[in-house]
Length: 133
Image (cartoon, rainbow, N blue to C red; front, side, top):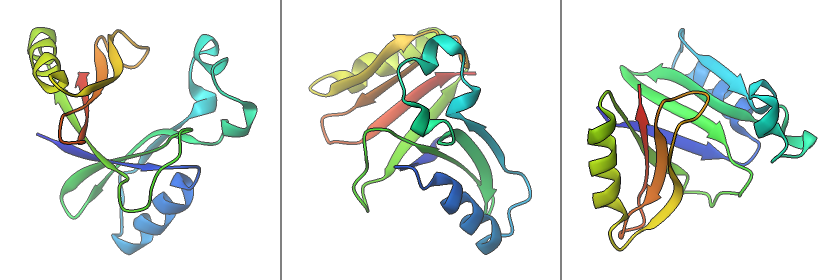
């Protein structure tokens, strides 16, 4: 399964509220920057406390993930793809293939939300988030 991840620059809450009414979403879940562990908060200003770290909802039968980024986004280029996997070795293999002639955005590492997570922009400019669930 591949899950689209839509990035915003501080407008994720507004977008979620909008999509919630447009698509009559009943299953949204939202986590905010202020919810992350203290050691991670030090990398962000307090202005981002109410930014959406991760949200998910089902839109017309498809799971969609949404979040805010502190790096800004370009309208129309806000979608990346998330690939949940269960095997860490499979994630490592996929990550290594995607990073060939690409750019590592976040090295594979354990996080507070996953035993293994990493982000890479492939040689075509597509951003992939690989996450172990």
